[in-house]
Image (cartoon, rainbow, N blue to C red; front, side, top):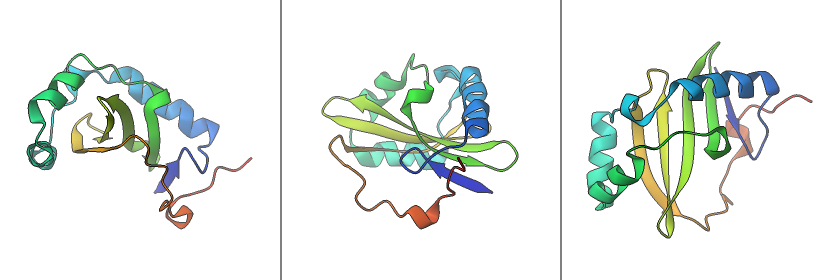
Length: 121
């Protein structure tokens, strides 16, 4: 299993796999897991977040993380939402497995590069 972050680098072949996977996704095919549903309830903005995702079409430009194991296992997306961002992870079946909001100005100073594979030049 390989895990990549956009700040550290994603190999071109993984980007291509991710783009193919994303083309197949659409909001009506991205149901919430029980965990994601509970996380939405904890956020306290369940309805407004659901509305923001309704009709949402994923784009590679919103990807921040990819987990790959011969195929795409998970992709993390970050999209603007009011004065924050919605962050969510989609699994290989197209299900949102977790979701939360994050401060738009979060610059990931806690990002641990040791948790990710490096893209080879």
